[in-house]
Length: 178
Image 1 (tube, rainbow, N blue to C red):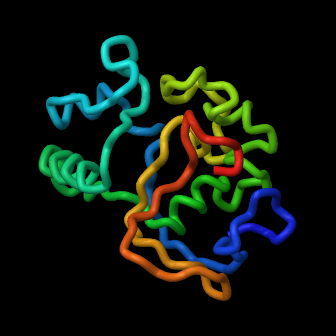
Image 2: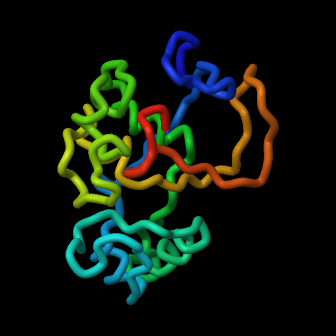
């Protein structure tokens, strides 16, 4: 969640304590080249021929599950999966090392994110912006990132649970509040 004083805070973002177990998360978003290597196709709308290191986009939650299934078949015992929303937020905020910042790693969005104000209306190669305190890139902006959860409001917040899948981080075409 976020403090009531945070600009653009939603009513369903109440601050609350969460404990996460140890987990691993990718340093970068999945690239178009990564997706092509595992899936054999590239669903991306942007940069197909010119940007294999751009984050893959136009991928549904079900597509992501199929990618993970094939990745796990290729690397038995690794157990790749999407992060939970709590894991994603912990990672985006820089874990225990993280300084409290509005965006993942900085208070100035342009330092850490490709978003509607600087992207040129397209995705960009992963890792071009500043990493957060855990060394993770593009947790804010570039492309939305799927989580394993379905939506439910945080304890004490307004909102209703539903069956929509959670995604986080904003994208190349969004404003800073996302």
